[in-house]
Length: 69
Image (cartoon, rainbow, N blue to C red; front, side):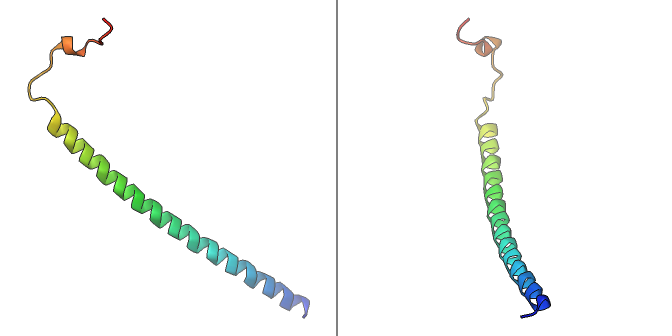
């Protein structure tokens, strides 16, 4: 095998590894985006629950004093 053929073979091998790595990174990014979307939905639900659970009447300032006073 000549030097040129050897270099081409080495480049083909490196490209193959690079393509595999890119595919794996794409899958990782896709999974992470799914997790982000799920967590964003949960945060949205929690915000709605907090809004709905908020007391309708104003709280007294005495309710705000920490218990150690």
